[in-house]
Image (cartoon, rainbow, N blue to C red; front, side, top):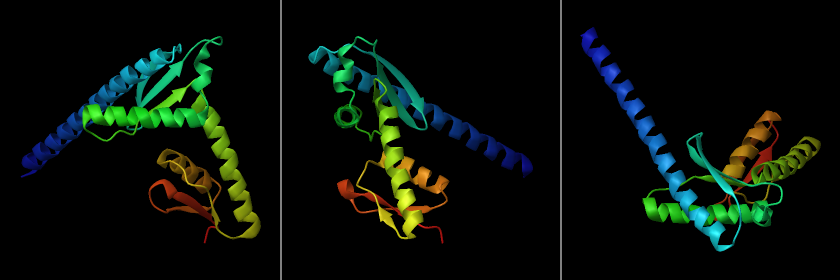
Length: 176
């Protein structure tokens, strides 16, 4: 009986490892499709940039970089990158017929966005601590909400997502 349990456990481990490899392979393919789409967009707008593909935390990450004199900065504003990311996701989902959670960083835009988001969340945290009352943040993407939840938790407060679709937002609350 114990040999059968060991065999079953071994099969489960092998199956999980196979699923993980398939998942990484799928994410790499997703990254390749996204890179092809972005490369075409960059060519259309005559923008210079090198695209690096990585798989991190269950997502395909694409980083577009260029030297200091590049015109890539023209599309590196975080809101522009967010729009390009959504367009790229749609293109990937259309081609692969599967949901995409890819992340795009153009010329360091992710760090700029992270810095701005951190300032926004820290203001909300300070307000919650000062007033001991809940504070609602503006609607944001699921990726930004995840980062916000983590920052709020690090500050010793609780948070919850509310709303639907594009109106989904976070409410920071005092710890109970």
